[in-house]
Amino acid sequence: MAVNINPKNTTPEAVAGDTLLAVQDLHVWFELKRFGFGHAGYVRAVDGVNFELKYGESTAVVGESGCGKSSLMKTILGINIPTKGDIVFQGRQMSKMDRKELTWYRSQVGYVQQDPYGALAPFMTIERILEEPLIINGVKSKAERRDRIRKVMEEVKMSPPDDFLGKYPHMLSGGQQQRIVIARAMILEPKLLVADEPVSMLDASVRVEILKLLRNLQEKHNLAVIYITHDLSTVRYFSERIFVMYAGKLVERSRIEPLVQNPLHPYTQALLAATSDPDARNALTYRELPPGEPPSLVNPPAGCRFHPRCSQMIAGVCDVNVPPEFEPFPERMAACWLYKDS
Image (cartoon, rainbow, N blue to C red; front, side):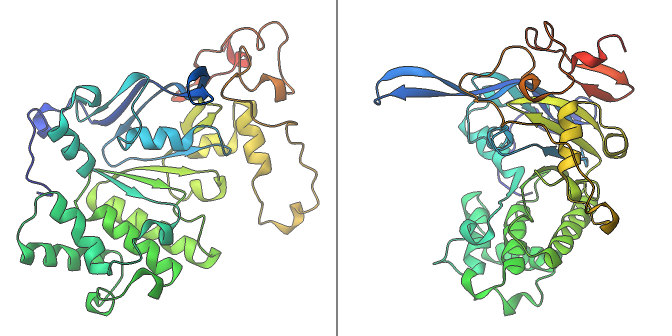
């Protein structure tokens, strides 16, 4: 076991169905202060998000900067406290977990940061960096810690381990640093891995290797993965499902291939249109992208939050009423009034 904590009702028999993680009507609002004292409103970073994640499933959350991806991720990691709603992991509500259970929960959720160099303490050796989570979570045997460190180093293709364990982060390349970040995320044998833009800081030649590594680890350990990114070009090679997020809300949910072939929400269509195309014949093709910028999350527009930028906006509907989730095709959701009668 990864930790010496076994809270009640966390055995496989206590888990309902095959759902590992459920995000239920999640709201994460950050209060703004005027001059440090007076209330000045809220930043509605996450505003009513619902989804479920199964054991061993890889799901991508995509959207522009400022859409709420990072706030959603930090809430799943237990860093942010929900304003409303809850996160349920293996049938247990995070809001009802005591300190001991929260420690257990955090050991079950690995985190792969975007910037590997910034994520690794520069004054620690690689061995110390990997050993620290084990010490914190009660693995007292030095031999067990050493064996587990060497095992995870082999899994992330950093072998022989003794060539790297005595080094400091600045002595490694960017790709090697990211492998150490992944090793640290895997050291407690988690059931869920949250990867925040894990390849955006790396050279193009290294990105494919890191994505393949994450995919291999997912399949080997039956890991569930939440892949946070704005780069749709990498999503289709890594995830089974995709959630599209805009201004704090999920606007489309689908399996990868149907979404790539036929995006439903106008915002998803705009994201795909803005994705770089490796085909040289399309280099000079004009792509019509939506005007303007994402809205302020302090004072978001009424109705659909994408309507000020949407060329298909229905006056008197999209700018007035918040769209519910429609299902125009099986297992495909779009929060858009265009699909009201579908």
